[in-house]
Amino acid sequence: MSSIIELGTVLLPRVRWDAGVELRKARMADVEPIYTLIKYWAERGLMLVRSHNHLYENLRDFFVLEDEDGQIVGSGALHLLWHDIAEVRGLAIHPDRQGQGLGRWLALAAEREAKDLGVPQIFAWTLQVKFFTALGYGVTTRENLPPKVFQECSACPFYDNCREIGVTKVLDPQRAFKHPVR
Ligand SMILES: CC(C)(COP(=O)(O)OP(=O)(O)OC[C@H]1O[C@@H](n2cnc3c(N)ncnc32)[C@H](O)[C@@H]1OP(=O)(O)O)[C@@H](O)C(=O)NCCC(=O)NCCS
Image (cartoon, rainbow, N blue to C red; front, side, top):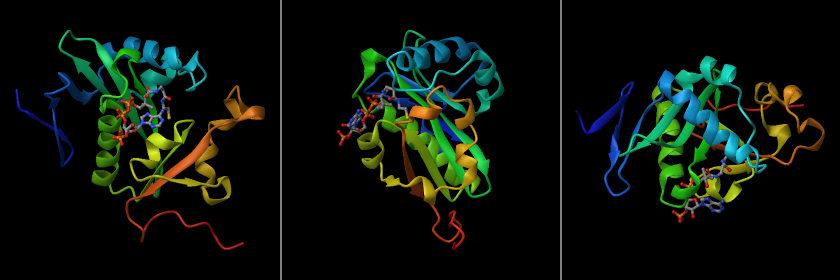
């Protein structure tokens, strides 16, 4: 097996040797463990729960981390929203594998895929602002985000009580979203 994972033209190391974990695109058999991982954190108020239906429909967005026992210990996704912006979502690391650089690795995979696709800006809704700022994201205001990023808000159980903060990273300043002058 090659030691390099190909994401389009993007190459990333397939395995973090020190962590004994393989990074790869998700497959159908991963839906249940991704669902369980996200549900675990959603029940603790850190993420939005994702239905099986959502995971099936969006499976091609997802990366997973698989350990040497075949257990899925991390998930993360890049979801394209419009020509100039994509969302990093579904980032979840197994509770026993926190703080080992795995979240960073998944976020980097999503970022590299965005670059590969020519997406000029990525963003996330999150309560983990420091995690994202450590990766070069900046906190943004809702007014500075395009309408597309709010498309799921109306179906969100926290619609009236949203605590999530928008963080964004510009990959190509020339082509990144610019709010029309009001
Ligand atoms: C947030 C999460 C994905 C981070 O993954 P992780 O593997 O634990 O984090 P990493 O080890 O890759 O950390 C990367 C950097 O972010 C920092 N960091 C990670 N989580 C952090 C947190 N909650 N607060 C502050 N800093 C954090 C780390 O210290 C590290 O910085 P360093 O390299 O300077 O030490 C993980 O903790 C998680 O699954 N949390 C629960 C679900 C969640 O909140 N998901 C985010 C939804 S947007």
